[in-house]
Image (cartoon, helix red, strand yellow):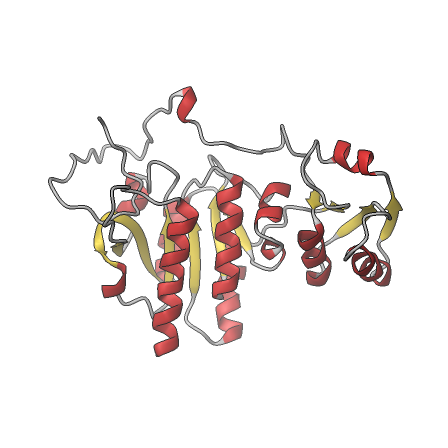
Amino acid sequence: MDKRRDGYGERTGRKPHRDNSSDRRPRREASEKPYREDSAEMPEGLIIGRNPVLEALKSGKAIDVLYVNPDAGGSISSITRIAREQGIVIKSVSEQKLSQMCRGAVHQGVIASGACAEYVSVEDILEVSRRKGTAPFIIICDEIEDPHNLGAIIRTAEAAGADGIIIPKRRSASLNATVFKTSAGAASWLPCAKVANIPQTMDMLRENGIWIFGTDASGNSYTHTDLTGPMALVIGSEGYGMGKLVRSKCDHLVSLPMNGRITSLNASVAAGIFMYEAVRQRSLN
């Protein structure tokens, strides 16, 4: 059976032949296409669920209208109070209306309508570490297509103290309602840059003194790699890992030990392990 490399395991044995002629991914069969909850399924510009809406309000994200079911109870009263203090229009609607707006997603009695996707520049992310006076800590997602994975990565990155996240414009999940909900509101706090060319962005980061660490099965053990300096961590796509050109632009490759029968990890799980190893090393320094 042909086993695909997802880049997150440390394996032994003969290395597969590498074709460096292009950065093109193998074509996916229809059954292999990762689940995507994009604009065709989930309306853009909506933030759905109590915690994502609450964090959006706290962060000052631009919200036009707050739709609430007044009978939902719980933290709805706190959410409406904060919205009222910020001068946001509040509309009381039925449970059925909310379900129609979010096309059946779990809304917990509240939906915010506004600018869901607000992107920054890479320079803005670099400025974050300058203001904090810390070594840059940036996450690069190389074609993470599942919005649930992207949301989980953003949630962990924000909790780990990363300065920001960089995603490509093509073949990637965007900051939609699913990402905001999965990130538990962290997408309202973590700066996100959307760039046309990841390899060129990596060159730009290197010119700013940042080391690029790629996650790949052939890399050194993540615990034996110094992650305390200015760094950008590249997380490869679900199923195929980093592209060849992206991989060639990395300064170092790091891997996770895989001691069981399962030879791969979910992209967001692997990302969390790598990120918190960097946090552990930095805390020792």
